Image (cartoon, rainbow, N blue to C red; front, side, top):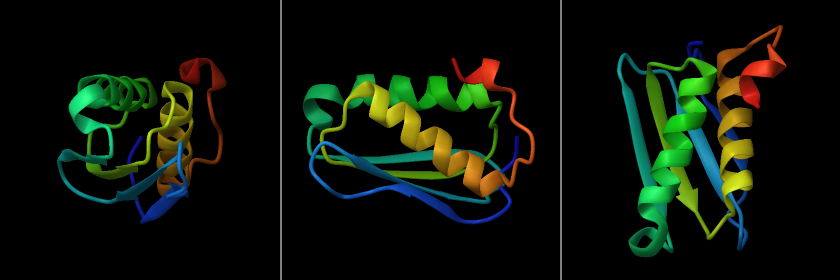
Length: 96
């Protein structure tokens, strides 16, 4: 999967996060979080795991976290990447 256009998912509300994706030659993940000192490693693991399942190897991923749960982080990353990649058919089994 490859990001071909800018896309966004999520909000900056409490307990949510906003994910912005942009085309870029190498994969770069930038995480800003209100709870980065407590949960930064866990957030990074979830984001990297989700991107790996989607088969994403390049692109700029910017995350503004406001204390979201793991399932919300995963869902927002998936939506932003899918919007940015213009996927017409999706293999739902890869997103489990």
